[in-house]
Image (cartoon, rainbow, N blue to C red; front, top):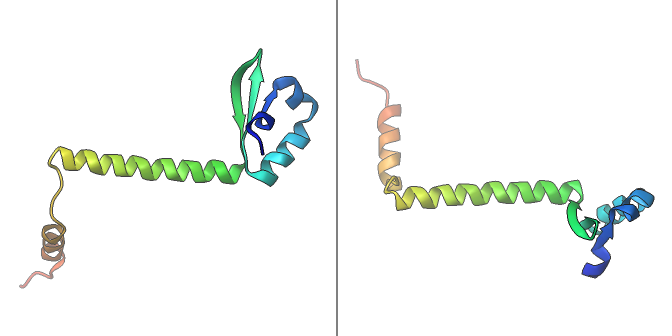
Length: 93
């Protein structure tokens, strides 16, 4: 779909809500809604929204990991595994 077809005024949305929702769900492409000539909202299908949220969550985790590395909070995997094994090892009476 052409980007110009993905921008609709709010009056169009009010008059053609079912058609806009059908198109958004069929094409999985968002529609920008304008009010007084300015972009005010974006309508997208639920699947695309959920996928976007999952992607953002992963990016946040990557950023947190990078920040931890930069702050020197990271430990080598072998050391972590050794510490876990030590904690899980049954104690001798």
